[in-house]
Image (tube, rainbow, N blue to C red):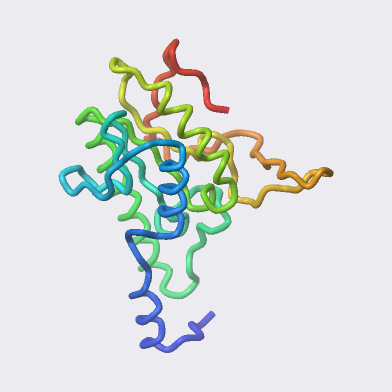
Length: 195
C-alpha cells in the first residue's frame, strides 16, 4: 500500500516524534514519584542515557516504545508495508543497540528494568507494583541483571472490566522473552518471583 501522505508531510510527522519526555515516561515518573522514589533523568554518563536513574538502588529504567524497540508479541509492534527493507534494518539496529547498552550497564554494576509503552498505557498500577517489588528486593549484594517487564505476563491489551466495574488484568498464558539473549536477574532468597 502506498503512503497516503506526501514526502513533506511524512517528514513533518516523523520529525515530531520525541525521544525524551514521552507520555509513557512522564506517567511512570509520576507514579514513581508519588510512591516516594527519587531519581535522575537521562544521565549521559551512563551507556544509552537511561530514561530514569535510581542511584540509591543502582537501577536504571528504560521506557521503550513498542514500535521502535520491537516489543515481541505486542499489537503496536507493526512493520510498515512500504520500504520494508529500510524498516527491518532500522529495527534490527535499534534492538542490537538496546542489547549492547543493557549489557554494558549490567557489567558496570547496574540493575536494568525495561518497561514497555503498552504496559504503562493499559496497566500502570500493575507495572508500578512489579517495579516497586523489584526495587524492594534489591540488596547490596544482589547480582545485577536485566529485568524485562514483558517477562511478567502483562500484555498489551487494555484491562477487561469485571462484573463490579473494576479492571481485571488480562495476562498471557506464558511470559514472552524479548530476545534470546536477555539476561534475567537471579531470584535470591530475599527477592520473590514477580507474577
